[in-house]
Amino acid sequence: MSSRYEMRFSGAGGQGLILAGIIMGEAAAIYDGKQAVQSQSYGPEARGGASKSEVIISDQPIDFPKATAVDALLALTQEACDKYSSDLKSGGVLLIDSDLVKNAPAGDFTVVRIPIISTAKNEVGRAIVANIVALGAMVALTKAVTRESAERAVLSRVPAAFSELNRKAFQMGYEKAVAARK
Amino acid sequence: MSKKVAFMQGNEACAHGAIYAGCRFFAGYPITPSTEVAEVLSAELPKVGGSFIQMEDEIGAMAAVIGASLTGVKALTATSGPGFSLKQENIGYACITEVPCVIINVMRGGPSTGMPTGPSQSDVMQAKWGTHGDHPAICLVPASVQELFTETVRAFNLSEKFRTPVTVMPDEIVGHMRERIVFPEPGELEVVNRPAPTVPPADYRPYDTSFGDVPPLAAFGSGYRFHVTGLNKAEDGFPTTRAGIVQAEEERQVRKIEKATDEIVTWEEYLLDDADIAIVAFGSTSRSARFAVNEARKHGIRAGLFRIITYWPFPEKQIADLASRVKAIITPEMNLGMTLHEVRRCVKGMTPVSGIFRVDGEPIGPAQILAGIREVM
Image (tube, rainbow over all chains, first blue to last red; front, side, top):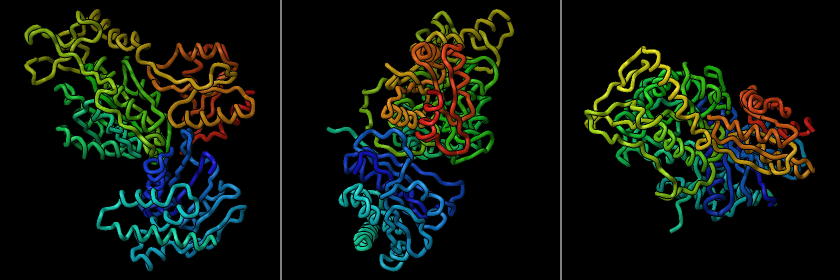
């Protein structure tokens, strides 16, 4: 990993992508002992509209807190994919929801397709954990933080009653990404 | 024991900084992108015996803060753009009555409702000239989550020391981004409390200049009685129109900050020792600038960064000195040239000054600053 690694989680407002970014940042900054900055951009509406959450991870102090050339992009909606994929690095990775993003942009990067929302809904059991499925997949694809740190960060963020649900969501996402990459 | 570490938002750090500084009262009206300051304090203040009140509007919140402070409590409000406009009348009231208080204004796009979730740096002139009349202004512009904590503490210290409102103005990016913060231990940062009067209640006068330009402020409820008014006042606090007194009081109120400029002004220099081009920036834009300076250096361009931390009083002397050392100055900012104007005033034509402006709700990225550097080469 080069010293500055940039990730973007994008989709629609209300999908929990800002939280996914925060957990990624916590995994890096608290549990992996690295530098991390998380920021977000969203419209004034509470639900819907394109939303993004960016995480920069580095071994060095981070100056500019926003993405400059994205190493890894998650897109849960076609609108977000169209809007936020133009600065994806060559050699980078694009993770899309295979049911919702039908037109992946062409470019010199790897496209990984996983039915993220349907996995959350049908295999984990709750659509609400789609962001954690996505997070698990992003951790597997980027290796920007260790799996252990990410899991600890997830569990420290959710109420105890939902630990198992979120653990399962993370694991599903992680394993599907490993399988999809093969 | 190792220090407490967290990954949190600038606004959250600001709230914790306020509590560290001894703030025990918050009044506000929620507004994006500052609401997290109120949200955290609504949970945290009761735990330390403090009070939180959501008022009916912004001007009411500012009034409540002034009232609370007059009882001897360190008081805070937080707002953004349109809310900052609404508070101005009572900020002027705090200036003339010389009541310590801190105002957090997380800068978003404007004027008016503007862009609620978009970053901006366009309130810096309002921080000085927003309320009418001659008055002092102190305004701090932090650039990181950690600094938003420490500058909030410093804001309380300055307001207590100089009996004046102090504004802390992160842009939306600094207010909303999350970074690692290491919480200072109690006692690690200086915490200043306003001096209590040394005279008995019968002899107390709230603007008694025999104690200097910042007379001690008594707390209501401590046995001292005095009059508080927005009218020009004499040293006993009662209104006066006597020309000599009004002139002297007005001059003192501005002088108390002006003569302490060297003590208040803070800034940071990065790679300026041999620089040909200086970027003058603050807040999140200074972080883009630092990135751009590093990039420029990789290409053999001697660029450096002057980061403004205290915006008011403006670092006039330091900018003038900078102008004598470099061949060009660039001011990138998320407004249409407010800092450019102020820098040019200080530079007095000694060196060319140009600006990079952005008001579309997007940050000024390193590439845009680097292009600006190449342009003046």
